Length: 309
Image (cartoon, rainbow, N blue to C red; front, side, top):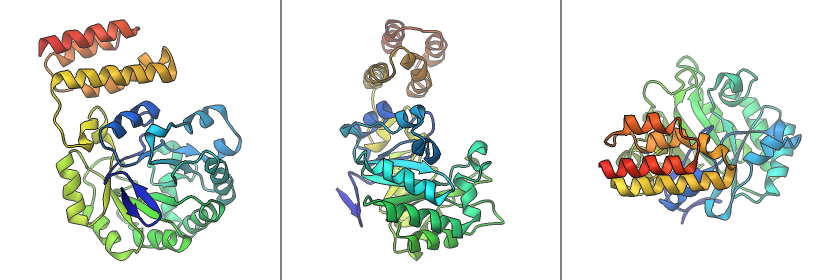
């Protein structure tokens, strides 16, 4: 167990919140491979306060997913505080505030990475959540809105003054979205200049790269996003053979069916294509999987794929 002040991680490699991917089945898979912390995708504070059913469904988790954080977003301090009160009753390990999402529909309403332009509001939001819950509170940020507005030290100071327990830094600006390179130098600078534990995020595509970032930046942990999709082995550094990949896909599929019923078939497709990417006959299997409508069909396709290796 890694202790970062009030926050405890089961290991130094943690799973990023990825909209449409980091649901309960995927989180379970990642924890079984050594993931040190899981997190929901970003969840609207407004939706939580209004008890919107779709929003509340996103808050569900199981004990197998711990240590576990619920990530909320919003720009009204009072609404964020009220949402934190609701979240605390669910007993996650951490409440995380999203201040880094670059999606147009999120920043268009002044949420996510749009908050980086308002360090004073960042402070008010973080302080309102910290004061309303007994749980440790973390915040996920980017290094600025764009290259002309790299005000990360102001944002970090605002979070630090508010009593945040941990800061997760994605080394890109909002303008970059997910293009270009993440600036690990800035992550290192933030880690050196704040007393709050910092988790580095950005361009972690392998177990080796993860430890390379920790060594370079001095961060005690790193967050892995897209590199974990279809590759939960990134958390252990193991290289699976084709049999193990197929068995993991089948397990993940069954978890999706348990969670979502028949809808899980459709939702699993995007995971499967990432799992089998690079395997022999993957293209042919992929075209068959997108047409499959039952568990039996998918299992048959997977078995055929394994036999062809």
